[in-house]
Length: 256
Image (cartoon, rainbow, N blue to C red; front, side, top):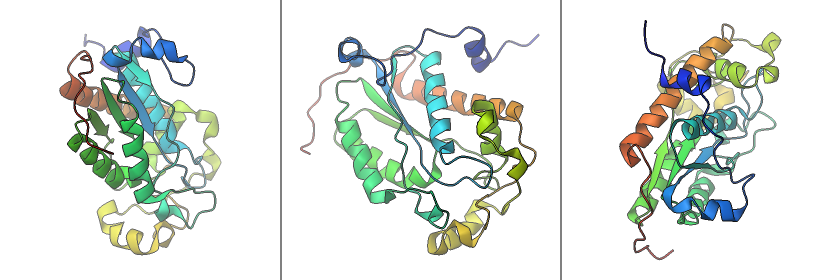
Protein backbone atom coordinates (compact mmCIF):
# COMPACT_ATOMS: atom_id res chain seq x y z
CA UNK A 1 0.00 0.00 0.00
CA UNK A 2 1.46 3.36 -1.01
CA UNK A 3 2.05 6.14 1.49
CA UNK A 4 -0.27 9.17 1.37
CA UNK A 5 1.00 12.23 -0.46
CA UNK A 6 1.83 15.37 1.55
CA UNK A 7 -1.25 17.05 0.10
CA UNK A 8 -3.49 14.15 1.11
CA UNK A 9 -2.04 14.25 4.61
CA UNK A 10 -2.69 17.99 4.75
CA UNK A 11 -6.39 17.41 4.07
CA UNK A 12 -6.64 14.44 6.46
CA UNK A 13 -4.83 16.16 9.34
CA UNK A 14 -5.22 19.91 8.94
CA UNK A 15 -2.76 22.08 10.83
CA UNK A 16 -3.89 24.92 13.08
CA UNK A 17 -4.95 27.92 11.02
CA UNK A 18 -2.13 30.19 9.93
CA UNK A 19 -1.95 33.80 10.99
CA UNK A 20 -3.52 36.10 8.40
CA UNK A 21 -3.05 39.82 8.04
CA UNK A 22 -6.74 40.16 7.19
CA UNK A 23 -7.76 38.91 10.66
CA UNK A 24 -4.83 39.14 13.11
CA UNK A 25 -4.05 42.31 15.11
CA UNK A 26 -0.56 43.75 14.86
CA UNK A 27 0.79 42.49 18.22
CA UNK A 28 0.15 38.91 17.09
CA UNK A 29 2.17 39.53 13.94
CA UNK A 30 4.93 41.35 15.82
CA UNK A 31 5.42 38.30 18.01
CA UNK A 32 6.18 35.98 15.09
CA UNK A 33 7.31 38.10 12.12
CA UNK A 34 11.08 37.78 12.62
CA UNK A 35 10.78 33.97 12.43
CA UNK A 36 8.05 33.83 9.75
CA UNK A 37 7.72 33.96 5.99
CA UNK A 38 5.10 36.28 4.54
CA UNK A 39 3.24 34.56 1.68
CA UNK A 40 1.71 37.03 -0.79
CA UNK A 41 -0.77 35.71 -3.40
CA UNK A 42 -0.49 37.53 -6.75
CA UNK A 43 -3.44 37.29 -9.08
CA UNK A 44 -5.31 39.33 -11.66
CA UNK A 45 -8.77 40.60 -12.49
CA UNK A 46 -9.25 39.49 -16.08
CA UNK A 47 -11.65 37.55 -18.25
CA UNK A 48 -11.47 33.76 -18.17
CA UNK A 49 -13.79 32.77 -20.97
CA UNK A 50 -17.59 32.73 -20.97
CA UNK A 51 -17.74 30.24 -18.10
CA UNK A 52 -15.31 31.41 -15.36
CA UNK A 53 -15.12 34.50 -13.11
CA UNK A 54 -12.53 37.26 -13.36
CA UNK A 55 -10.81 36.15 -10.14
CA UNK A 56 -9.46 32.75 -11.25
CA UNK A 57 -5.76 33.62 -10.91
CA UNK A 58 -6.28 35.28 -7.54
CA UNK A 59 -8.33 32.34 -6.23
CA UNK A 60 -5.62 29.87 -7.25
CA UNK A 61 -2.80 31.95 -5.75
CA UNK A 62 -4.68 32.27 -2.44
CA UNK A 63 -5.37 28.52 -2.32
CA UNK A 64 -1.71 27.70 -2.91
CA UNK A 65 -0.57 30.11 -0.20
CA UNK A 66 -3.01 28.51 2.21
CA UNK A 67 -1.65 25.06 1.38
CA UNK A 68 1.87 26.31 1.94
CA UNK A 69 0.86 27.57 5.39
CA UNK A 70 -0.63 24.17 6.24
CA UNK A 71 2.50 22.30 5.14
CA UNK A 72 5.22 24.21 7.02
CA UNK A 73 5.48 26.25 10.22
CA UNK A 74 5.76 30.00 10.51
CA UNK A 75 3.97 31.24 7.40
CA UNK A 76 1.85 34.39 7.63
CA UNK A 77 -0.72 34.93 4.89
CA UNK A 78 -1.02 38.37 3.30
CA UNK A 79 -4.19 39.52 1.53
CA UNK A 80 -3.93 38.90 -2.21
CA UNK A 81 -2.87 41.45 -4.80
CA UNK A 82 -5.92 41.09 -7.08
CA UNK A 83 -4.74 43.28 -9.98
CA UNK A 84 -1.85 42.70 -12.34
CA UNK A 85 -0.58 43.09 -15.86
CA UNK A 86 -3.51 42.01 -18.02
CA UNK A 87 -3.32 44.33 -21.01
CA UNK A 88 -3.58 41.44 -23.46
CA UNK A 89 -7.15 40.89 -22.24
CA UNK A 90 -8.25 44.48 -22.89
CA UNK A 91 -10.74 43.42 -25.58
CA UNK A 92 -12.96 41.75 -22.97
CA UNK A 93 -15.10 44.07 -20.79
CA UNK A 94 -14.47 43.75 -17.06
CA UNK A 95 -10.75 43.11 -17.31
CA UNK A 96 -8.81 45.51 -15.05
CA UNK A 97 -5.07 45.94 -15.56
CA UNK A 98 -2.38 48.05 -13.92
CA UNK A 99 0.33 47.19 -16.47
CA UNK A 100 3.82 45.80 -16.07
CA UNK A 101 5.55 48.95 -14.85
CA UNK A 102 3.02 49.59 -12.08
CA UNK A 103 3.05 45.93 -11.07
CA UNK A 104 6.83 45.95 -10.74
CA UNK A 105 6.80 49.11 -8.61
CA UNK A 106 3.98 47.75 -6.44
CA UNK A 107 5.90 44.55 -5.70
CA UNK A 108 9.17 46.32 -4.95
CA UNK A 109 7.52 48.69 -2.50
CA UNK A 110 5.37 45.97 -0.93
CA UNK A 111 8.35 43.70 -0.21
CA UNK A 112 10.45 46.61 1.04
CA UNK A 113 7.72 47.30 3.58
CA UNK A 114 7.84 43.69 4.81
CA UNK A 115 11.35 43.83 6.30
CA UNK A 116 10.02 42.75 9.71
CA UNK A 117 9.55 39.24 8.28
CA UNK A 118 12.27 36.64 7.78
CA UNK A 119 11.41 36.55 4.08
CA UNK A 120 8.67 37.07 1.52
CA UNK A 121 7.26 34.47 -0.89
CA UNK A 122 5.48 35.91 -3.94
CA UNK A 123 3.06 33.24 -5.22
CA UNK A 124 1.94 34.31 -8.68
CA UNK A 125 -0.82 32.49 -10.57
CA UNK A 126 -1.04 34.89 -13.53
CA UNK A 127 1.41 34.39 -16.37
CA UNK A 128 1.08 38.01 -17.48
CA UNK A 129 2.78 39.03 -14.23
CA UNK A 130 5.86 36.89 -14.89
CA UNK A 131 8.11 39.65 -16.24
CA UNK A 132 7.34 42.31 -13.61
CA UNK A 133 7.63 39.67 -10.89
CA UNK A 134 11.02 38.60 -12.22
CA UNK A 135 12.31 42.16 -12.47
CA UNK A 136 11.00 43.10 -9.02
CA UNK A 137 12.58 39.99 -7.47
CA UNK A 138 15.94 40.79 -9.05
CA UNK A 139 15.78 44.38 -7.81
CA UNK A 140 14.85 43.34 -4.29
CA UNK A 141 17.62 40.77 -4.09
CA UNK A 142 20.20 43.34 -5.15
CA UNK A 143 18.99 45.37 -2.15
CA UNK A 144 19.69 42.44 0.18
CA UNK A 145 16.07 41.43 0.70
CA UNK A 146 15.10 37.81 1.23
CA UNK A 147 12.46 37.16 -1.42
CA UNK A 148 11.34 34.18 -3.49
CA UNK A 149 8.95 34.32 -6.44
CA UNK A 150 7.15 31.24 -7.74
CA UNK A 151 4.80 30.58 -10.66
CA UNK A 152 3.07 27.30 -11.59
CA UNK A 153 3.76 25.46 -14.83
CA UNK A 154 1.28 23.77 -17.13
CA UNK A 155 0.32 22.61 -20.60
CA UNK A 156 1.29 25.35 -23.10
CA UNK A 157 -1.70 24.42 -25.27
CA UNK A 158 -4.06 24.87 -22.32
CA UNK A 159 -2.86 28.11 -20.79
CA UNK A 160 -5.97 30.17 -20.10
CA UNK A 161 -9.49 29.18 -18.97
CA UNK A 162 -9.05 25.70 -20.43
CA UNK A 163 -9.01 22.29 -18.79
CA UNK A 164 -6.46 23.15 -16.10
CA UNK A 165 -7.88 26.39 -14.77
CA UNK A 166 -11.49 25.25 -15.11
CA UNK A 167 -10.70 22.08 -13.17
CA UNK A 168 -8.92 24.12 -10.48
CA UNK A 169 -11.94 26.40 -10.04
CA UNK A 170 -14.27 23.38 -9.93
CA UNK A 171 -12.15 22.15 -7.01
CA UNK A 172 -12.08 25.51 -5.24
CA UNK A 173 -15.35 27.29 -6.12
CA UNK A 174 -17.63 24.96 -8.09
CA UNK A 175 -20.55 27.37 -7.77
CA UNK A 176 -18.58 29.95 -9.78
CA UNK A 177 -18.27 27.76 -12.90
CA UNK A 178 -20.88 28.14 -15.63
CA UNK A 179 -20.49 24.67 -17.11
CA UNK A 180 -23.27 25.23 -19.63
CA UNK A 181 -21.15 27.96 -21.23
CA UNK A 182 -17.85 26.07 -21.37
CA UNK A 183 -16.54 25.73 -24.91
CA UNK A 184 -13.16 25.14 -26.55
CA UNK A 185 -11.01 28.07 -27.55
CA UNK A 186 -7.71 28.23 -29.37
CA UNK A 187 -5.59 25.14 -28.60
CA UNK A 188 -2.35 26.11 -30.35
CA UNK A 189 0.76 26.22 -28.12
CA UNK A 190 1.20 29.56 -26.38
CA UNK A 191 4.64 30.16 -27.93
CA UNK A 192 3.06 30.16 -31.40
CA UNK A 193 0.52 32.77 -30.32
CA UNK A 194 2.86 35.19 -28.54
CA UNK A 195 3.62 37.50 -31.52
CA UNK A 196 -0.10 38.07 -32.13
CA UNK A 197 -0.88 38.35 -28.43
CA UNK A 198 1.76 41.05 -28.02
CA UNK A 199 0.67 43.02 -31.09
CA UNK A 200 -3.11 42.58 -31.05
CA UNK A 201 -4.19 41.01 -27.75
CA UNK A 202 -5.98 37.81 -26.85
CA UNK A 203 -9.16 38.59 -28.72
CA UNK A 204 -7.26 38.37 -32.00
CA UNK A 205 -6.52 34.67 -31.44
CA UNK A 206 -9.55 33.51 -29.43
CA UNK A 207 -12.89 35.34 -29.68
CA UNK A 208 -14.26 33.58 -26.58
CA UNK A 209 -11.14 34.31 -24.47
CA UNK A 210 -10.16 30.66 -23.97
CA UNK A 211 -6.78 29.08 -24.71
CA UNK A 212 -7.49 25.38 -24.33
CA UNK A 213 -10.54 23.15 -23.97
CA UNK A 214 -12.53 23.28 -20.70
CA UNK A 215 -15.29 20.91 -21.74
CA UNK A 216 -13.85 17.86 -19.93
CA UNK A 217 -12.73 19.69 -16.80
CA UNK A 218 -13.48 18.09 -13.43
CA UNK A 219 -13.05 18.84 -9.74
CA UNK A 220 -11.00 15.66 -9.32
CA UNK A 221 -8.55 16.84 -11.97
CA UNK A 222 -8.50 20.21 -10.23
CA UNK A 223 -7.58 18.69 -6.87
CA UNK A 224 -4.78 16.69 -8.49
CA UNK A 225 -3.46 19.77 -10.27
CA UNK A 226 -3.57 21.88 -7.10
CA UNK A 227 -1.71 19.11 -5.27
CA UNK A 228 1.03 19.13 -7.93
CA UNK A 229 1.34 22.91 -7.81
CA UNK A 230 1.29 22.97 -4.01
CA UNK A 231 4.07 20.37 -3.86
CA UNK A 232 6.12 22.36 -6.36
CA UNK A 233 5.68 25.49 -4.24
CA UNK A 234 6.62 23.62 -1.05
CA UNK A 235 9.74 22.24 -2.71
CA UNK A 236 10.78 25.68 -3.95
CA UNK A 237 10.33 27.22 -0.51
CA UNK A 238 12.15 24.34 1.17
CA UNK A 239 15.11 24.71 -1.22
CA UNK A 240 15.19 28.45 -0.58
CA UNK A 241 14.48 28.69 3.16
CA UNK A 242 15.12 25.18 4.46
CA UNK A 243 12.67 23.03 6.45
CA UNK A 244 12.11 25.76 9.05
CA UNK A 245 12.23 29.52 8.83
CA UNK A 246 15.40 31.23 10.08
CA UNK A 247 15.20 34.36 12.15
CA UNK A 248 15.46 37.62 10.29
CA UNK A 249 19.01 38.93 10.19
CA UNK A 250 19.16 42.71 9.85
CA UNK A 251 21.27 43.71 6.85
CA UNK A 252 22.28 47.02 5.30
CA UNK A 253 19.59 48.06 2.82
CA UNK A 254 20.01 49.94 -0.41
CA UNK A 255 18.66 53.48 -0.37
CA UNK A 256 15.13 53.59 -1.78
